[in-house]
Image (cartoon, rainbow, N blue to C red; front, side):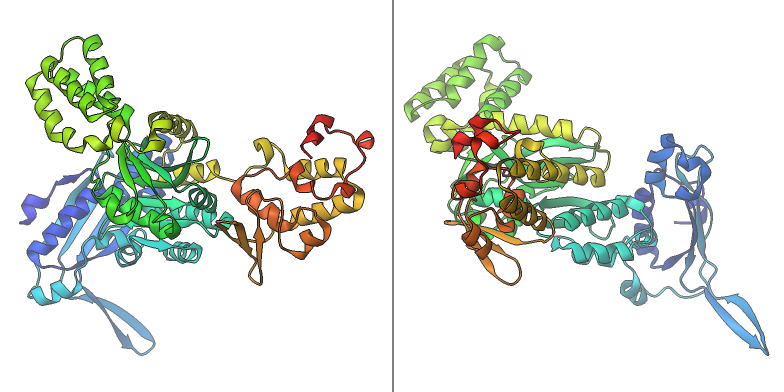
Length: 545
């Protein structure tokens, strides 16, 4: 490759140039470094919101790369220092085009005055190292990629960050906020190899972990929404005793292979006690690689969302020239809802007699072989009672509203965390309102004690774990046991006063249970103000006591 062929070459993103430049260096065995550069963010015109896409894509208005053999030797003559540039003068200059749409090679010299050594090149060359100039080093991102990180790691990475390029700086700040509010959160970042570019982000909060510990039997995994055109958000849902779905893990990713494996591995590492408790995992119809489930969740029966299978088969039949929709839709309903193997085979015969040959070839290849995963007669009992398709749709609608304004990963993380922030009773009471309610129904002394304990609940971060008997809270010195309904605690404050303690409030706060709950006072009626003297509280409420 000569100088003439390089001059005027255009690149519509820095990533495109770096890919080209890495290949160029590998072919020529030449080592270059960034001698000087001018970030686009420093240009006045770049502050216009309409140019934000250009700034993100190109990063620089100018970039000069010089051969690594350029040396600056200093000669001392008395008190005077003189600098003389010696060595190789090979270089390459990149500038933004006049139309501000791309980067262009405007000048270059590829003639080296020294031998290019393949051994030296192999030792020093690092693919994608140009990203290092603008953000974190690729050595750092390669080291932490696919590893769980904690708040201390995030703060260390923020110190390493040189600029906010690639959205890393903002993303790290979002994660710092997450760990500040929830030190027990589990976070895993995956970077593109040898690039400071996030490929996948997995996380769950302490509340989400508590939910899946409480309801591990049946999980659902599917794609939910697209974020900013680059990332897809996948969610793990757990199903409670009432058949409602709760998000217990998120995976935000560019399109990558082995996504189900990565998510399940990360999930089991985050909540290891659920590994042998999951009895059923329901997957979206387009989720691939079902075989990994048995390896990671040994007792789980794999199911595919039946309503999604119906719609997927229906769309495929339409694409392949099926007859009238009113004829074929009932056939697919009959197929998925078959109550016996005989009924299923009869439904298949009805399909075969009605639909095109190409569709049946597709059906036999992709769906008949996994019939036990989506036909009603082979279904896990709980999936017959819970409409997983409806739960997925509800979650998709909820996320679509909550993430409507998210244009970056950083914003998406903050919005997702906000969705799972602990909320008080009925999602409306402030701490002051909770305290006011207790003062309204309790005598002054017990009300003051409750107020004090409620104040302590939010000041300390506790390690909380759910067990078969209830909850265990560790404050760093001692462990305290609480029942499942979170109305009693083994601490001396509760056992001596029979009033709610900081441990009960802290656990209720984390689990999204109401902080004002009359059941917390059921064992100490002496603490209550007589009914006829109470104010501000409906007398009917006290029938719960």
